Length: 395
Image (cartoon, rainbow, N blue to C red; front, side, top):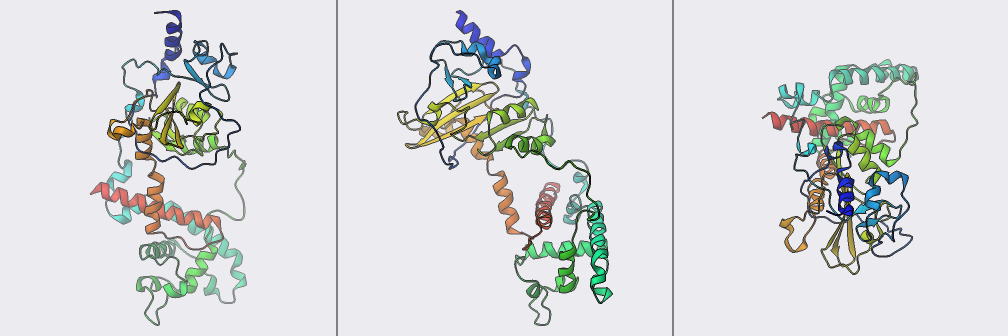
């Protein structure tokens, strides 16, 4: 074994066993590239390292690879080094292949069977009490504007539950976008009995107008100005699953080398498409005019694997993964020879779209200019879907 091979092995082993902790091998699937506007300031094919580059402090952990001979690596626009050689697999089970949290309902959800019980897990008594409390605060502020006391009387939890059930019924019957006049019509018997017998149209419209979810007399102490950087958003959303060896599939709006490394440090993996104009992506991964159709290029920058796949003569698909650490090809794709990273992405990318599609079938939302009410509608939609899943699982 020559000195160059020793340096490569030391680089991949990294003298840190924790690098193996979350990286690993999964399979993947069929994909269409996200259509993004190419904003490349320069073009070109594979960019080799022209000799021995100056070491970058941000890439100090892979200096041995940078010192390897010409042709062993791809170089990103920002000098990120991607090795052409996959890291050594020492044969032990990657920890992201060990599921710490079994799927299915947890805790109290295991004891809930009926649809009402399952729904109460999400819209529980405490939430209903708070909505009722804050709505009554708003009613107290405006009731003097009404001539008749009954037109602005306070609400209670029973009425609030009835109000929410009316919203749910409009979603089930797909009448959520009809006017309240049509929904509550009882003279011509074109309305829904269960709706107009619960409350009057005027009362329903009044509750929609005064519905509140916080104490409008005082605002809680801040700070509320938080970063909306893409990596920061991902970290906030993913925080509940940190350390549970759960993978996150994301699109190119959120995928980046920085985000991948941050997730890896918190015991979470990711697979996602990459924009071609990301500075960490080598030029040769963006352009493949001379490459054969259905060919792939792999780059390895522990813990990340980058792949560029030529899906069509003029179409390149680029993905990054922490779950995969080799150049595996999905045999099921036959002549198209798609990388397993792409196969896995396609099997898991539709999760959010599927939830949105199901929710749209029974959408409770109505036109509103108040964003908290819009969020409330979405909360009811998601609560109903999750309650359905728990109810089905319990059976």
